[in-house]
Length: 95
Image (tube, rainbow, N blue to C red):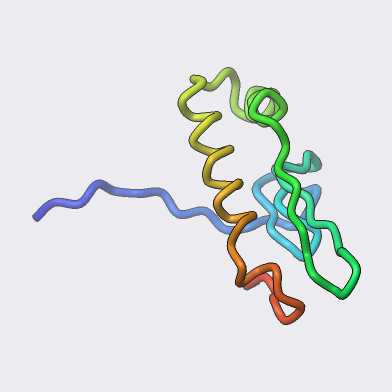
């Protein structure tokens, strides 16, 4: 059975060269892709940038990307934002 080779990347510090994931959200370099807001009662709510904004961030970092790539990333971020695990008060990113 053959599996495709996937690239693995390490997270970078927020504002550094690469993808960051921390208690304030997800960023590529200095550009937020998803931002976490703390609501009353300590619950977290995540706001994902629209696909057009994400496309501009990707273009600045990697050059123009096909719409399918931008929409797949937006869809993945949106699914992650809905995940109940990270919305709890106890969630901490893995570093």
